[in-house]
Length: 466
Image (tube, rainbow, N blue to C red; front, side):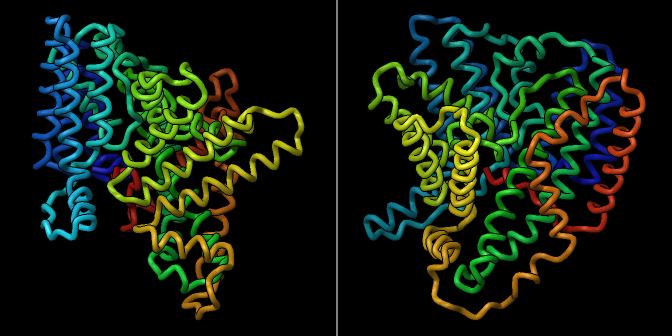
């Protein structure tokens, strides 16, 4: 079930909210747990058992860590191994078989495996829980339903943000309905819905049309249009989903941390990763980079640790060499920035402008790698972006992709990728006139988004793939 679907907006969410707000506080976790199981089973009923098994494995693993401290390392390893085994089988097994066949000239048949939606996200959340218990950062959760709620909570179940257990443990145990936060949550949800439906979907149609063609069948300007459209689609698609998830959390008394902080205004790739998919980058920092030694064991070890982190960041996104290359691409520039000090803020405005252009250049090229199905396609596409592909016959001219509507959406997307309107949702009650105008605008935005949903069949969520 998509957040941006009529069923969710007008049936599932109102019923869950009504029931949640009406029942006693002691029953609210039960309402959310049952709603989350229904939400997941709605789209993936056959893989519900995988998620439930993950919950049971991590519940048992944490209990063993707490009960047998002398053997807690063994319990931790066994639990994480089981978690990663599920992830490997469903997400990476066929990739492994394909590469073994290629390397050894074998013909091992791949398995017919469909990846359960959200498995990368809820697996990482489960791992964060058992590691937190192992470190003593949080107490073991002795209530199985409460742990199940943490792992399966529907606002962030299938596409994040990745919520670390120590950030929400107290909220799961005890929280009250915050009636002042509910309107703020609704507004945040509407903003996310509009970003997804009105911006990401429109730019996604442009990007999909271009990337569906042979990379040598269009001009260099069209290649850049496809890369920029996809870059903006990806941001508004994923940040829109995160906005909706954070808004839903507020409606039910949860305060999730921000997942995006205007990454496209960054002046370095290091800064970009402090602003992009924050929950993933902080997860890797807390549970991989720091345990590997972080920056505490000399420069060479720091660079190696960064390389490992970004190799696995790319691999986390998907079982494809283009994702791995994309991760290494970002890791390479972060290491170079650390070596040269490029990531540090400059007092010279002209240098900051150059740094910003450099950062845009790097991540747009990276998104081409991310979007391409294979390296051959990505390589030809990138060469086309720099005019290195021989002259060709264009199926469609530039104007075919960039009509007036798409041009307006592109301009709006570029504007909204900056913090120029960032405070709109948070206008206080004291500013009654401004608040009234903002609320009226958001209502109009909601109605327009719903009308687009009703009239269009194009409504994918990119990060459902991961």
